[in-house]
Length: 243
Image 1: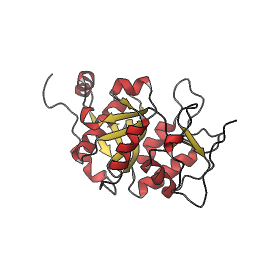
Image 2: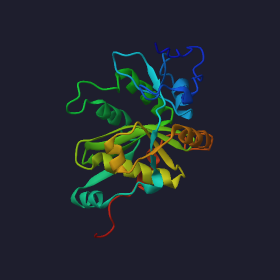
Image 3: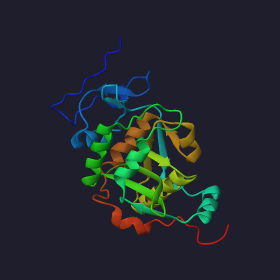
Image 4: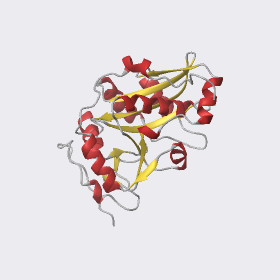
C-alpha cells in the first residue's frame, strides 16, 4: 500500500523532498494542505506544483523527467510567421489574466472536465493581484483568441496552461512570453508534464535532479516583481518584412 505524505496545515512552506516522489503515478509527492499564496510560492520554488481534479484531494507533483522550454530557443517558426502576416492580432501582457485562466479551464474537445477547478482559478488570481502570476493575451479586435499564464519565482517562469481559439493563438502567446522573458534573463519556462504538443513546440525533457538544481539557482535570483502590463509594448512578433 502506498503511504502518501499529508502536508502540515501549520507549515505552508514545508514539502517532502521532491526527489522522493512516486514513480507511479509519475511525480506524485504529497496531498492535502491548501492553495494559499505562501504554500504555492514555496511549492514552485522547490519544483513542485498542484494538479488535481474536482473530485480528488489536493495533490502535489514533481515528475521525472521534467518538461522545459528554453526561452532562447522559443522563436516563431515559418508557419507562425506566415500566420501572423494573415491576421491583425495584437498582444498584451497582464491585461486579462482571469479571462485567460478561465479560457484555459474550459474543457477541451473530448474532455469531460478540467483540472483548473474554481479554487485553482481564485488562487492564481490572488497570485496575479500580488504580482506573482502573469498572462500573455492574443487578441483579434476585442476577441481573446489565445493566451498563456503562469507564475514567476525569481527568474524561473512556471507555465501553467495555454489555450487557443484560432490557429496559432497559443503559439503566438508562448512566443510573446518567451520574447519578454529573454529581455529579463529568464532562461527557462517550466512546462511541467511532457506531452507531444509541447515537444512539437520545442520543449525538452530534463532529469528531475538536473531540473531541481536549475530551480534552486533561478528562484534565488532577482526577478521582475509586480504587474507586467506596462511591458506590453516590448513584445513584437509581427514580421518586419517578407519571408
